[in-house]
Image (cartoon, rainbow, N blue to C red; front, side, top):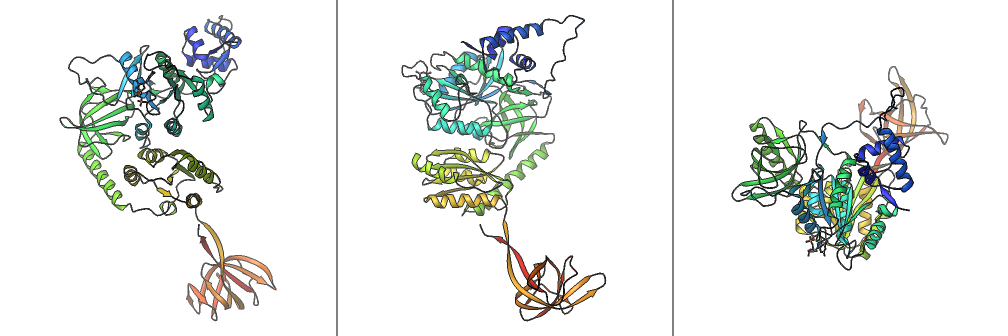
Length: 575
Ligand code: GDP
């Protein structure tokens, strides 16, 4: 039995996959995606149904009302922004070059040919924006400030090598970003290419390929010969259609820096990808702690463009400093205001850096828990050590809080680990190393981004510290501690106040605001709180054993001579 993908059927019918999928819902086949496969019979059914639906209904029978389409976001479909990730030497650069060579029109003579960090390819008349810097370091840096630049991620896996350490790392980064992934199984031209092994590796990672009934989209290709590259491009467009990637040129400006550098001749250069709105020359913008009036916008061919619309990457000239990747662009009317805000931010960042002290424990670092989720990046010296550490972390539990292992890998703690942890918007990030060191750049970045990083030589210490951090997220735990006992000698009823118990403190002390348990003939008769504590006529904070005092118990006027009062305080339980 042959199988066909939904998008292939859509192509045969000459309709957009999106429309076909809407029709399938009516046909009672919901949940299918453009890349899903169906049997021949189902394909036939779909074709028939679609033809019927597409042919005009006879006038006497009004067409059935179409299922309500979800409200479309404002704007129009814009080019998807695609990043390429994967293990070193698996062919990321070769793939990006192949696409560029085949699908990017050359700039006019005299254009500046250096890369700006992204380019737009035109495939079947539609543009796709590729981020030119491959690898997960760049990928995660781009989303470090919370703005998502990438719409679709390509994971490149060499068919002769299979899934490797950095492949796993890349998958974790993609997962954390929550963007759709397409696996490009590269180097299919090589004699040692083994596609099935790659599929198996992916399945082992929990990404069951489509052809095995899962949802992971894979495309076999060769970046070197170009074979299969067009399939990949087609798949990108398909997924873009499925995802509904929109931008409104008239809307609010959303643009993120993907690359920046200082050019000796032209000054600070920053390449941004516009996701929404339009960036124009002469606009006054703030980018992090830099600002400027846009002097020129250059496209990926080095040609000057007056404006950048959604989906376009452009290089900005005119900023007064070099903003880091991941920083977002804000447009503002008043240049003086822009200068002031940028300067203020620069000052605040400098202060923050000074304020950071060498951290001791995770527990100290997480003073105020804002979240109920701990996201951990774990690094260890070997796979054995990593497995052991993973196992230890797996045993940690605290009700109501979640520990998510964002990434676990072998090797020192690097900048990429810090970026991954800090880009995670929801939880409290922690980067833990077991028998590994933190490289210098990573340590500096961790300080800037305020990401707690610790390394351990003993696995028990690691588990204990992370366990404490987890419990810290729960907020402090309290317990009652008995501090004293008093005997009621007499009582006085005072109008408008209530009954006061005249007591003698037998042991310990009585404290204002303390909890109180009252016992009569050995039985507990009331549990409450001390509303006021007086010695003679004065309000006091506490009264020691051997002294007398007047106690009023909140909401209880039945205290009697002879009752025993046990006094408790509520204390935070140390972790
Ligand atoms: P990156 O580190 O992932 O960017 O990998 P590169 O693109 O630099 O490729 C590493 C090596 O693999 C280079 O020597 C490429 O020529 C080679 N390579 C890349 N793609 C293919 C392919 O499809 N087939 C073959 N045979 N070699 C390839």
